[in-house]
Length: 122
Image (tube, rainbow, N blue to C red):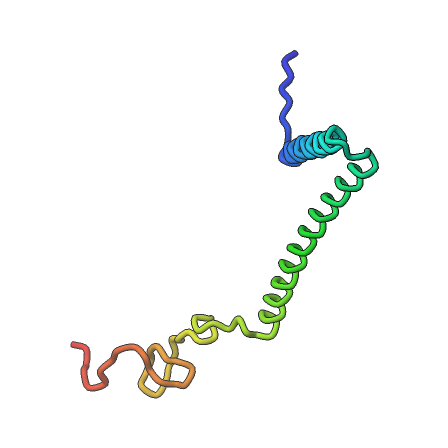
Protein backbone atom coordinates (compact mmCIF):
# COMPACT_ATOMS: atom_id res chain seq x y z
CA UNK A 1 0.00 0.00 0.00
CA UNK A 2 1.40 3.36 -1.01
CA UNK A 3 1.11 6.02 1.68
CA UNK A 4 1.91 9.65 1.19
CA UNK A 5 2.44 11.85 4.21
CA UNK A 6 1.63 15.51 3.97
CA UNK A 7 2.83 17.94 6.57
CA UNK A 8 0.62 20.86 7.43
CA UNK A 9 1.90 24.40 7.86
CA UNK A 10 2.05 24.23 11.66
CA UNK A 11 4.28 21.17 11.56
CA UNK A 12 6.62 22.74 9.00
CA UNK A 13 6.87 25.94 11.06
CA UNK A 14 7.54 23.90 14.19
CA UNK A 15 10.31 21.95 12.48
CA UNK A 16 11.92 25.17 11.22
CA UNK A 17 11.76 26.75 14.67
CA UNK A 18 13.30 23.60 16.14
CA UNK A 19 16.19 23.76 13.66
CA UNK A 20 16.76 27.44 14.45
CA UNK A 21 16.77 26.66 18.19
CA UNK A 22 19.29 23.83 17.71
CA UNK A 23 21.55 26.14 15.69
CA UNK A 24 21.38 28.78 18.42
CA UNK A 25 22.27 26.20 21.08
CA UNK A 26 25.21 24.99 18.98
CA UNK A 27 26.37 28.58 18.55
CA UNK A 28 26.08 29.20 22.30
CA UNK A 29 28.05 26.03 23.11
CA UNK A 30 30.72 26.94 20.55
CA UNK A 31 31.07 30.42 22.05
CA UNK A 32 31.25 29.03 25.56
CA UNK A 33 33.89 26.46 24.59
CA UNK A 34 35.89 29.18 22.81
CA UNK A 35 35.88 31.26 26.00
CA UNK A 36 37.01 28.24 28.07
CA UNK A 37 39.82 27.46 25.58
CA UNK A 38 40.90 31.12 25.79
CA UNK A 39 41.53 30.60 29.51
CA UNK A 40 38.29 31.81 31.09
CA UNK A 41 36.94 29.61 33.89
CA UNK A 42 33.83 27.55 33.07
CA UNK A 43 31.69 29.51 35.55
CA UNK A 44 32.72 32.82 33.98
CA UNK A 45 32.04 31.48 30.48
CA UNK A 46 28.57 30.38 31.60
CA UNK A 47 28.01 33.82 33.14
CA UNK A 48 29.00 35.57 29.90
CA UNK A 49 26.72 33.26 27.92
CA UNK A 50 23.80 33.98 30.26
CA UNK A 51 24.47 37.73 30.07
CA UNK A 52 24.38 37.62 26.27
CA UNK A 53 21.04 35.78 26.38
CA UNK A 54 19.65 38.34 28.84
CA UNK A 55 20.73 41.19 26.57
CA UNK A 56 19.05 39.56 23.57
CA UNK A 57 15.82 38.95 25.51
CA UNK A 58 15.86 42.52 26.88
CA UNK A 59 16.29 43.93 23.37
CA UNK A 60 13.39 41.82 22.07
CA UNK A 61 11.17 42.87 24.96
CA UNK A 62 12.01 46.53 24.41
CA UNK A 63 11.18 46.25 20.72
CA UNK A 64 7.95 44.42 21.55
CA UNK A 65 7.01 47.09 24.07
CA UNK A 66 7.33 49.83 21.46
CA UNK A 67 5.29 47.84 18.97
CA UNK A 68 2.59 47.36 21.62
CA UNK A 69 2.61 51.08 22.48
CA UNK A 70 2.22 52.10 18.84
CA UNK A 71 -0.59 49.58 18.34
CA UNK A 72 -2.36 50.83 21.49
CA UNK A 73 -2.12 54.46 20.33
CA UNK A 74 -3.53 53.56 16.92
CA UNK A 75 -6.40 51.64 18.49
CA UNK A 76 -7.21 54.50 20.88
CA UNK A 77 -7.18 57.05 18.06
CA UNK A 78 -9.43 54.85 15.96
CA UNK A 79 -11.85 54.35 18.84
CA UNK A 80 -12.01 58.12 19.45
CA UNK A 81 -13.14 58.70 15.88
CA UNK A 82 -9.92 60.17 14.58
CA UNK A 83 -10.09 57.76 11.68
CA UNK A 84 -12.91 59.76 10.09
CA UNK A 85 -11.76 60.18 6.51
CA UNK A 86 -13.34 62.49 3.94
CA UNK A 87 -14.37 59.60 1.70
CA UNK A 88 -16.42 57.83 4.33
CA UNK A 89 -19.97 56.77 3.50
CA UNK A 90 -21.51 59.52 5.66
CA UNK A 91 -19.97 62.21 3.45
CA UNK A 92 -20.91 60.71 0.10
CA UNK A 93 -23.51 62.31 -2.11
CA UNK A 94 -26.96 60.76 -2.20
CA UNK A 95 -29.57 60.45 -4.90
CA UNK A 96 -32.83 62.00 -3.69
CA UNK A 97 -35.65 64.39 -4.46
CA UNK A 98 -34.64 67.89 -3.41
CA UNK A 99 -35.41 71.55 -4.09
CA UNK A 100 -34.07 71.33 -7.65
CA UNK A 101 -35.75 68.02 -8.44
CA UNK A 102 -34.37 64.52 -8.36
CA UNK A 103 -30.59 64.47 -8.38
CA UNK A 104 -27.35 64.04 -6.48
CA UNK A 105 -27.31 66.10 -3.27
CA UNK A 106 -24.68 66.62 -0.57
CA UNK A 107 -25.35 66.62 3.19
CA UNK A 108 -26.12 70.38 3.14
CA UNK A 109 -28.98 69.91 0.69
CA UNK A 110 -27.19 71.41 -2.33
CA UNK A 111 -27.39 69.68 -5.66
CA UNK A 112 -23.95 68.64 -6.90
CA UNK A 113 -24.65 67.00 -10.24
CA UNK A 114 -24.64 69.20 -13.36
CA UNK A 115 -28.14 70.26 -14.34
CA UNK A 116 -29.83 73.11 -16.17
CA UNK A 117 -33.33 73.91 -14.89
CA UNK A 118 -34.08 75.96 -18.03
CA UNK A 119 -33.25 73.13 -20.40
CA UNK A 120 -36.06 70.78 -21.23
CA UNK A 121 -35.50 67.39 -22.70
CA UNK A 122 -36.87 67.01 -26.23
